[in-house]
Amino acid sequence: MTKIVVEETVNASVSEVWKSWDDFGGIARFAPNLKKSYLLEGSAKTGLGAKRHCDMADGKNFLKEEIIEYIPNEKLVIDIIDGSMPMKSGTATFDLKSLGKNRTKVTMTMDFVPKFGIAGKVMMGAMKPMFRKLLKSMLKGNADYVQYGKIANQQAA
Image 1 (cartoon, rainbow, N blue to C red):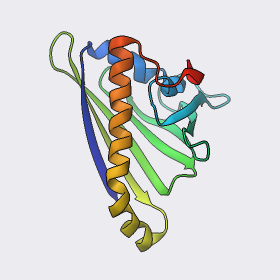
Image 2: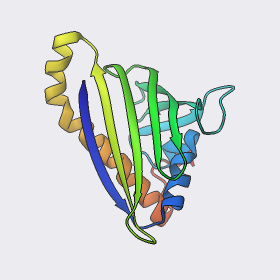
Image 3: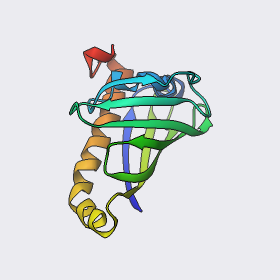
């Protein structure tokens, strides 16, 4: 299993930051590595069992994800249920912690098993810095969205 942890401090309350992550189908608004995101047919808007589809900005890859743990204003755990990325399985955990009235620390922990067995594990050593950079850019995009209303992807707006 590969683990990547990234953090970002957002100058906003936990409830404001949570609202952006809780818009489960709208993540592409602030995630620069996504071209488009939407809820899967029949999915709840959010909460346990909500499912979404994300098209990556490269125009080739996609992910389908499901919320498997949901604690409002505190924690969101998302399971990757399908996709074209080089992952056999994976989860993304978002933990929100208040650092005061208008400051929130968002910690994202990505745990995944790469595809391709031992070759995938070797390949992951080289790819881990790239994945870390992508995840960090998503958290930075979220901070800019919450703090300044900056939309990362106009197609998603």
